[in-house]
Amino acid sequence: QKEVEQNSGPLSVPEGAIASLNCTYSDRGSQSFFWYRQYSGKSPELIMFIYSNGDKEDGRFTAQLNKASQYVSLLIRDSQPSDSATYLCAVNIGGAGNKLTFGGGTRVLVKP
Amino acid sequence: DADVTQTPRNRITKTGKRIMLECSQTKGHDRMYWYRQDPGLGLRLIYYSFDVKDINKGEISDGYSVSRQAQAKFSLSLESAIPNQTALYFCATSDAGGRTDTQYFGPGTRLTVL
Image (cartoon, rainbow over all chains, first blue to last red; front, side):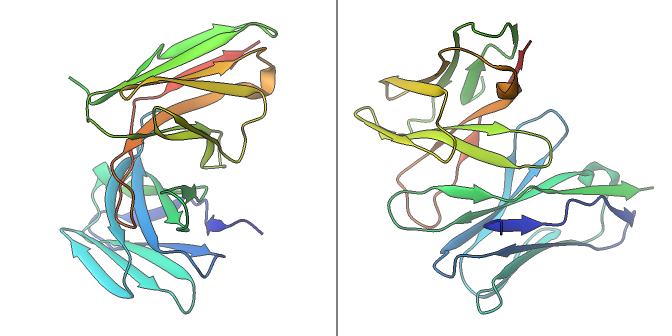
């Protein structure tokens, strides 16, 4: 079983709709969770991180964390064609250092 | 100027050749990382360094070595390149650690081993 799992997609959403992305993780000791966006051929860029149960909002993005169920999700409201990218979930398991374990990514396509 | 730079950006080489990928940063971060990315597999950690005197293996270090020449420079070497090392390589940096510590990525090096 992979440590961090994401549906590879593509997740196709119409412009203006809400895109919902999910990520599950296996290590119950995981401390913090990061969402990165990656355009094709480019480097990952941070969208947001979360480490407490519940919701965290930043503009059109909302991260949701449920440690009991071991999942973290990302909602993109009012999706735009420029949101078309691959979204990577990364988990900091904690312990020595700040090592991140990445999921395989979910590809999102926003159709005008 | 970019905070994290990688050279070269693209490289095509032959099996058995020695290759060095370089990473430099102006963010003043102590921690640096090397990842490789293959389609559908996300990013996998090769090596990481928390300061100039600290080098640690990641999950896929076999076939790779690194050198931390200074706080700002971290190089990745493939001693004898093989075709399954064809991938996109990213360098990343982060600050002091902790659960909110964020990694910042360079633009990547696309390496092809023939």
